[in-house]
Length: 92
Image 1: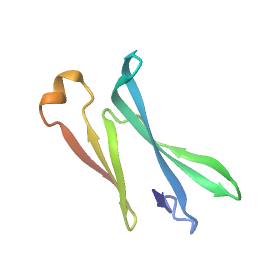
Image 2 (image 1 turned 180 degrees about the vertical axis):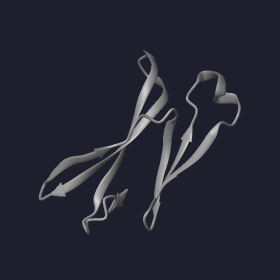
Image 3 (image 1 turned 45 degrees about the horizontal axis):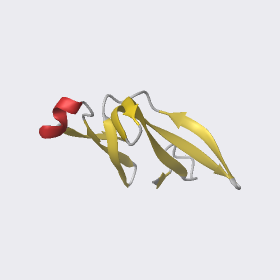
Image 4 (image 1 turned 45 degrees about the vertical axis):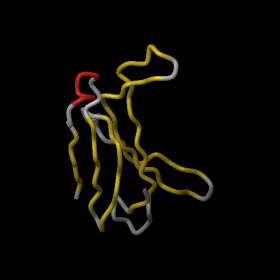
């Protein structure tokens, strides 16, 4: 997602990093935390400009609408796979 997160007139690239809680199987991971980062575009380079605190859920999607960044998250605990535990979070 591209957004002018710091309102300086230049867009930043917004990226998601999910942090695995279980990774003991080679082809299966469970994610229970994540964060978002913003990167400034400098020619052909990306420069890290901001990283959020850890969010206590796996981030499944990000969207923007004007100055608002929306995240959808899912509880990554194995017990919650069989019941709905998603959240919508937004930043203005």
